[in-house]
Amino acid sequence: MAKYGKTSAGMREQVPWGKHTPVHWRLHHKAIAASKDVNQADVLPVLAIKDPFTWMTSMCRHPYAAEWHHGDDHCPNLVALTEKELMMAKTQRKHDTNVGNGKMQRLRDDRTTTIPVSVRYAAGNYTHHESLVDLWNTYYKNWVTTA
Image (tube, rainbow, N blue to C red; front, side):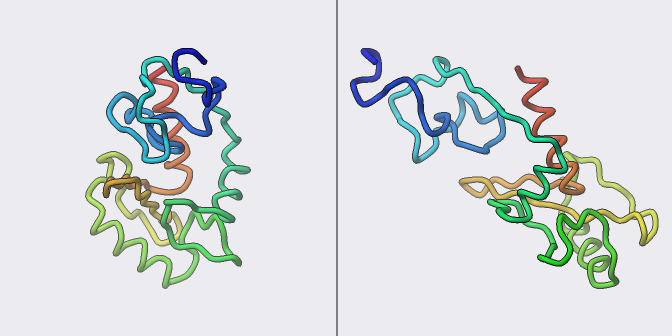
């Protein structure tokens, strides 16, 4: 408490580089809601990881900054089932040059086309993913390999 004042009890509502942001933002970004005077190197992040299925159903209720074609009747919508979804997925893939961190998957056939996901972070930073599963894998893999 002496280091950051009486208003700090040692616990913060989010890490200084921002809640839900990629781990590589640590030491390179300051969240608006986070305390500006906190040395990020002094922060020990603690991460709770939900299993992918439970996490995806939570994303259906609260997608935060993730954007993908889904509806209440078909969520998490991992694979294109209708002609409309297939055309939307193909169109989005043509515009997303960084899907899956540069691994653009060829559209093999209509039955195996995944629904792409984009995440809009602060300051216009976007990430693009093959699917909601790819988003989960990429986000948590980065925490494992960076730690």
